[in-house]
Length: 255
Image (cartoon, rainbow, N blue to C red; front, side, top):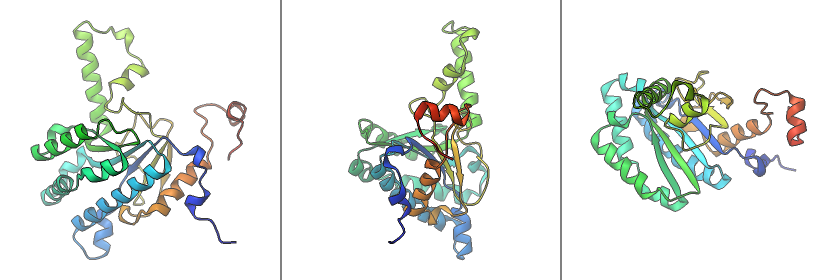
């Protein structure tokens, strides 16, 4: 009997609702091939398209991609400009309409070029009623920026008499974040071999399962994604409980 593919091994009844990805390794992928770093970003865009098709077909409801961090503004200007051009030229509504995918953006959009902002806002508005899957782009984003911004907004509400300091709790802070419209990630994947979160969804990932792979993002195909999902399914999510408590609650035994 032939070995099953990673996709064939998946339990479709235990697909995570929300997968977040740090798409790392575009530049190194290109440099290893003697290419300009921007060529890796171009190839990375194609992987986004293919990954979205897989995510939709598996029934994953939210895919959040770390597209451009606040720290990325410090990269060489030619690379930043190339990334902005890529973003502008590859927001194709066809891929959203074909799969009934909604587009959302988290991050400090005001720092993006005006033409990019306009293109993004148009696509966000045009796809707002789609509910098969939501693609979330983290653009000009960092968790420290997001949490700081949320605290400022809460402070303003207290100043205006809308809230009292005693009203502040985890739920209020979560509702004040830019990700309040979606559940926390079940699985966070980082490609490219680095073992850190790089200021990405820090609050939201308190109990997220983490998966790191040496595979560069341009080489991250359906097989690699399903391998990550299979690793997730083989884990027991305890949320602070003991394994015995979890088994008693859901009736499953996992390693």
